[in-house]
Length: 335
Image 1 (cartoon, rainbow, N blue to C red):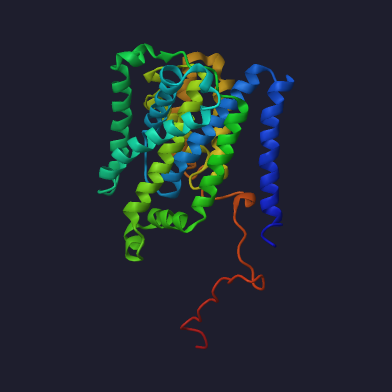
Image 2 (image 1 turned 180 degrees about the horizontal axis):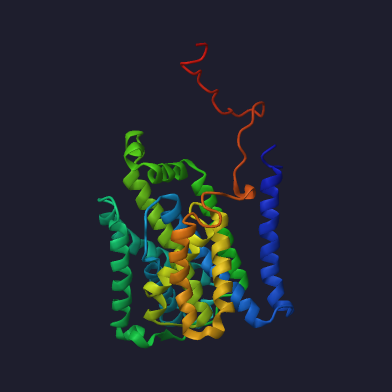
């Protein structure tokens, strides 16, 4: 009964309901102009990408640099489904399923990448994911029925502020429950010391594989939302530059922090939009910010910190759940 009336949990659900209500009502009311709504949708899509990448780079301590490849696979699979497979009348009701299929295709690609990569240690994942990103871009450029380098178009505009909000909340809910579970403690142990984690019976290869597949899945969902927002995609949209932007958002907000992921995505997306008058030079900002962050604040704004609202309630003495163990007596005590 106490868990049902937990103030923190109630506040989270009320906040989610309020966000969904605003995402549904504001565009219909005309209170916001289409430009602002478009920027909010970009912010939401980037939040999904940043949250998913932070699971691998922040919580697990690996270094993936090809996240745009998974986004591209999800975008193209979802686009083909709504343009060439489903009848037009089915596109709107089937949109959530289309996004899930796009995410599943990205996760399958993640399995192909991660299975051989996690058989080794060190920086091999960074090398493999970088090569994977380049391979995906090159393959898409050479498939003529997908438009080749000219791109693929014709998708209906199915992405709305409401659907973006739904997927941001769903991604945040899944990852929040995941990182504070036994699974999450396992991948955090891998980040701290993989050898020690293995010695304490943590199946490090299995956990790393699962975390990578979950990360790739949500990147694919974000790609599907992105494609049905712009109604046009091309391979250049998912180049290494896009992966660099995701890395900047992760390290700007802070590794190992869900709150940091949300902040990093919001700050970076809005900043790039404010710098739009600079033209192509604004794309210098992303790599430059990444270099400066690595030098002056490698942990980011919220590195390894979390807003109290997202933290689970710790067991307290007297509430029926076991409390923390008592500290062991020092061997020097009494001397």
